[in-house]
Image 1: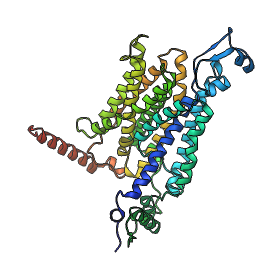
Image 2 (image 1 turned 45 degrees about the vertical axis):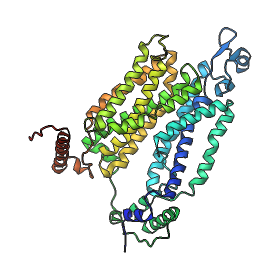
Image 3 (image 1 turned 90 degrees about the vertical axis):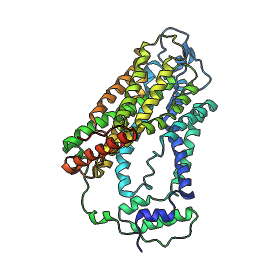
Image 4 (image 1 turned 180 degrees about the vertical axis):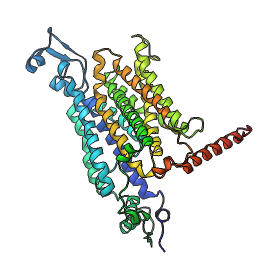
Length: 449
């Protein structure tokens, strides 16, 4: 008898030993991705230095004779004397890394929908929590390996191992099934069952409902522009994603610019994200906060935390230090970054969800491209970078108010659902049911309109 995909997963094992091994692989992959994203923070770190003559020598040979770096580590700055007019090259190297992510997002995102997830590799977003831990791991590596070439080698070598292991990963059975490749999906389900320690299944999948509509062209990115509701929604979400990326990576890359121990700063900028995850997961499920208010508050708090640094005196102590406020800002924007993934997917109709997430993800990469240059604005004033992050966070937070709440609301399946009376009635019914259940649970009288 033919079975559906969910029944097949139940027979093969929902989350057995095979899935746990794949999850462990993806968790370790996130640690590697975090090391790559943070590589320039230590490899391009600029230590304190002094020049024993007036002015900057014209040639690097002369500069090498008169400059003295006061550090116990090496970096591309100390090797190639990337100071003063040459300092922009460090930020440019980091910016080019994020530009590569943008190109990959444009190229391999649509390609993964055509060829599958395995041939173009995995999206790399198993869990942001592991990414935060990966930043701390990279700080520990940098503390143990002080020579920048060796540090780059140690950080990049695992990529070869992950690349080879990726060929052993099975394709997503859900994607195969959605593409009408039921025979291949059955083979993957057999692989999962054997990995979970079960005997070979007598499995036959039902034909996918999507195969009958295979010839129909799905709605594309242009629909995000044509529909007035989606147009403004997309513009606001693109700016929010851009700000989240700018502030998140800007504050993280700014860890090397703050005073104190460089390696401790980098580790703290990673570990401070850990409490952000339970915080955002708690608030987004509460009826009195939901997705919109929670994300707005996190972005505004992140903005204020960064803005307050300009009012601090130079010797303000540990409790009111710029580092502590910047860490608070990092925790807040990290929480907002986690929420925006969930919130965005609920704001788009099912048929346009991938297109909407793809466009927002592209705008996110532009924030990453510009983020490395913001810390260099400290040449104007030490507080300028954090003020830029603060203004960005505040503006994105207030713009969130223009978006609708999605908690406990029906998700639109098609573009027509956004304006259909039936869809709006469903939203009102859901809201009324939620209000009644909340009032009953709190012992309050229910007022009927």
